[in-house]
Length: 116
Length: 113
Image (cartoon, rainbow over all chains, first blue to last red):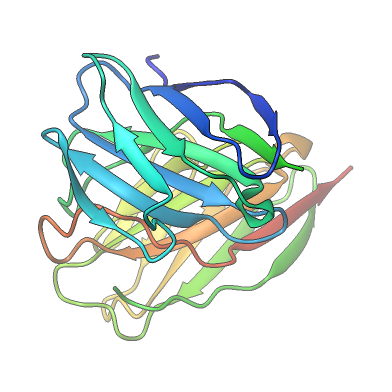
């Protein structure tokens, strides 16, 4: 069964450093998403991406965040200057139908980001 | 997107049937009901989706009454590996909202031997 993959599984960085989290969505999917989950809290939507542009973003997704699909397979989330409160699990997801009511999103295993 | 209410936690024993009910009183006409499962330190995983009546797949059943103001996820004969958080999501009634999923706190199911 095809799956979403994410690298690295765990990233430790110093406050103020830039990090890039990488995702390889399922190959025939066209819609891509990033979510995050702070330890012990609920999963929060960050951004959705389709046709090489952002479809929607949440309040969390400020100017420090950016997303990119640099080639036909990768989808990345960049945090320019990390803060302590960015420590969380970051999940990438992909789907075929976007905002269709019957859409199913497939999530990756996550990247645990620890900011020191 | 419709607000959902579900129990914060539930306990069960291996081999039992578990029913988790979700309330969504302001569900819209075009909204679908979707359940996701999340194991610790893993991403959410789609379990089942329905619009009305009953839906069954190899993992679970979803019961939706005629007024659609609630839904019940039924897990038959649970095992220890079913210990997870279960999320009820309602939405998708407007096409091309960007597709974001709004997760609540979910129901933490603990299955004991």
